[in-house]
Amino acid sequence: MKLLETDTIFAFMDIGPIARGHCLVIPKHHAAKLSDLPDDQTKDIIPALKKLAIATGAENYNILQNNGRPAHQVVDHVHFHVIPKYADRGDEEGLVIGWPIADKYSSSLHQSAQKDLSKDDITKIFEEMRSKL
Image: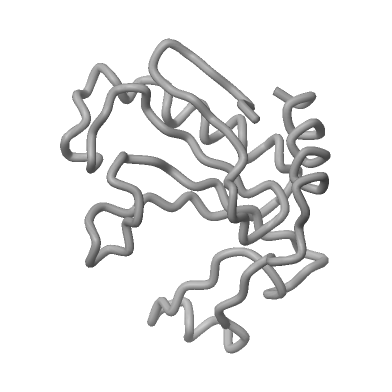
């Protein structure tokens, strides 16, 4: 389910979303880590992330990009997650990070995952987001 495509990137829904609208931006050029990606292949990444964040309809969101196994990279191809945080859902879904300075301002941080989305749910969300791009 491709949301967006340019000459350098693809964007699509995450197959294991942790929030409604969780999607990915990946460069077409293969590089395991961001530091391996040639600069000329990065031009569309930030504009795509911005468009997708807006398309989720969420006021708040995380942009996540991991490099290497110790940094929790699972797939050996650089990619960026857009993970919405919806105000009406609190910390029930989305990414939650134990960040020392953030912990001072939010005592309700906890790890969670959106596990009840069916393929049909993801397709519906895809169609909603795609219509906004």
